Image 1 (spheres, rainbow, N blue to C red):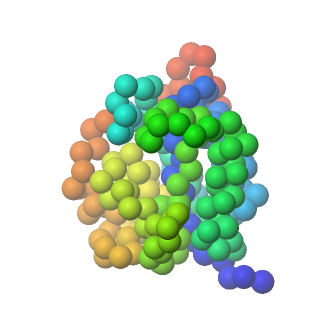
Image 2: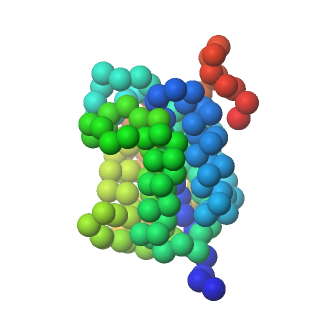
Length: 170
């Protein structure tokens, strides 16, 4: 039996019923990750490609026995199952699942870099990450998530309030 590693996964959605997409992705991930914490859901402006709908973002924390690349393959399979199609980088998507952290490991593969290479500049990742793992020191940079959060502008990251027509049963 493989040992279990603590993982942090970022979820994002800006197409369809965004809140339901996050719930469904979490349900599917629970088959390969024992989820121990879920952040609140935050509504955030798009990053990269600006002309697209606002995102809902969340971070989950859990344990998995999957190796890093196997976990990546499972997350990509969940995205595909939920209807994600290849499109423009940073463009709109039904679901986006990113491995932020895999234990205290620093991983540099062609298809996978952990810690996630752009997480340190993204308030929409750091705000929910700080919520599920306060005091967490990011491997490879040696700084606590709260300190990193002070170095970005979190003003666009707001707690999600479900609107009419969007499922608010979280």
